[in-house]
Length: 418
Length: 143
Image (cartoon, rainbow over all chains, first blue to last red; front, side, top):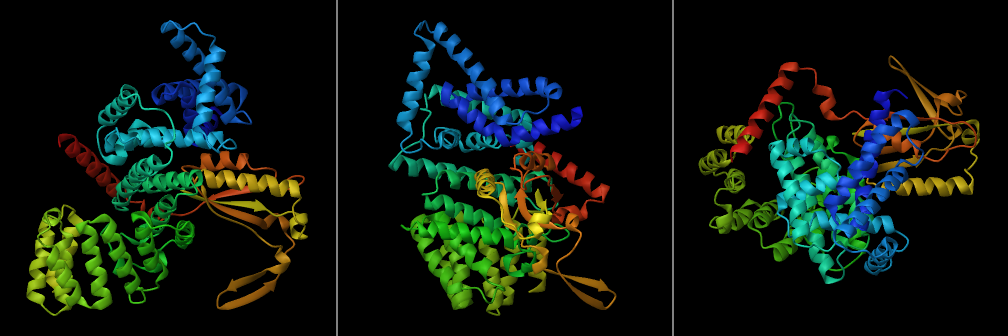
């Protein structure tokens, strides 16, 4: 193998193995920062040796073996530094026992449990959202600092600092390196789902004409969500999130026009929807629903997305079902944005006058004051009611509120056409 | 990025011979790894070409040719659709696949076209895109 090919093979191995490697080492040293350093040491060893010896048959095991040796060294030094002269093997045994107590029925998947612990730690609520996102992309996504910076359009130094501070916060807060159990699991899980959804939306909001790495964020978020679903198969909301992401991702190719202009759902060419992803999304939704229980916000949003995905045209969409789903969603989220979406669905199911009534009731909501979609929706409903002059004013108001140049152009064009 | 990964047919797959239990187990395990890694999008085995057909296009003429087809080397016996970050990652995963056949076999990897791939020719547009991104980063840094 040429050295270029070996380098690329090492990159690919790192992409596949790094999260598990860090997770396994963190299980030993109980500190994600140290675990990442040890994993990097193993990578350096691979970069030094594999060009000569070739990529091993089981590269993951090779890296873990090197990492474990370094971990034992680290533990030994740490024990000596702390004046603990107990037998190192006793120490390791005690740690493994402590670890075993955390693992209830997962004796057949110790790797999976390590990965789960890493996920929950990277998304710990003691960290700011920015920190959680950066740490997740770094430790679980294997993204470089530069890649993370480009994804979020911030300077590299900002991301580097965020990651350093996040690791420090985790160790200063003495965050226990474990998978939460019982009631705590649900609360902590929603923190994880929030991070994944945030990453997805950052990528989703990028238009097709921008840097490739931002749409690649959608792929990364999808991958993380799928991995999580396999690790927590009994959690309906995780499958709900997977379903939502698969279905939203299915529309990526239809969402922007040739000049990068946004195309609304009602105007999208559905032949450009990705039906492989839609199939997967509907499958994930079925898994969520089969688990029973009250549907959560992701499950409900996924069910709404599924209604659109199943319809061949806007007119064939099951709007009554969508209204019912928004009713349920509004009950558990009390979000004015959800109420706005519900108003749009009501207008489709019961006519624009009914929808307008709901939108008017929302106009004073403080969170919606600068939200361009309120006048945009209002304009659309007024236009459908034949109230053109009022509609035009609303579209112009919406255009003034939006920060997105292409969206502004779209709204001004609608105003002119009304 | 997406890749189609194709297992080339052999005389035995064309004869409709089913894989051994050991191979089925190993393949199931491999497929599970792909699913657990969030990489697997789709995967199917294909029945022998004797159950298939070809249609030849020549101008306005359409000719249907029934299987089986003799050039086994040009046939595929199964495929996957994977989502990975690079061709190298796809190659690394294929290396981990158990031997799909008794004896020699081949797996081919092909990248799927994404919409963006169709519009990358205009260098001025790419330059403008880089410029916009740089401006955005600078603006974000000032916030």
